[in-house]
Length: 247
Image (tube, rainbow, N blue to C red):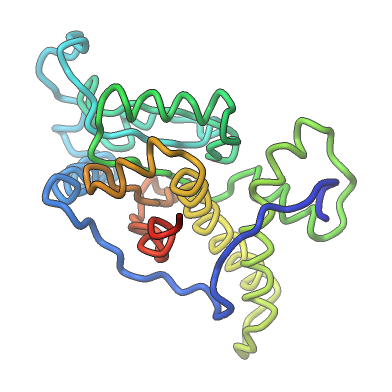
């Protein structure tokens, strides 16, 4: 038990986590990811075309083709980060970019959005320096037990942190400083946490699972560098086929 309750099972392979190139499978998903990447480039490079959109006040005629799950403690608009037109993205923020529990409000909100808008892509975006990831790592180091509400959130983030710490402990790379190791753990934990949210949705949401199995929806992870604003697209969950093959 960590932070006062039993952990969710984090079903990663025994081998250390290594990012796999799980690029978009469908033409629609590829086009959307490409659009998001180009929009983020305009944001980072402060392109003069950033934020220039036709009819910015007319949003009700636009059906979102993308759902974004991001962190509520990121102090910037995700529409700005991806230079999205009004209505293109439906953004749901939560502390630690978690999806919550099946049957809960956050989970149900995402299921409603998928059923209502039939988006082609759902992107879970973590960010560097996330206070929730750091708090979960501190719990693994023996920090004081947090409040019940905080434990509810941290319980869903700790599994990714445990995997990141274990991988770092098992890696005998020479010459790495303690600071370098800590940074690597934080980066890996942030990426794994975004993938863990995807896993929770694929395993526990019949609506999202059905859309993913049909090929009409793809779930992708990404990590935003808080110092530069650049977004690194991780791709689909490396075990997506196995997750969708479950009964």
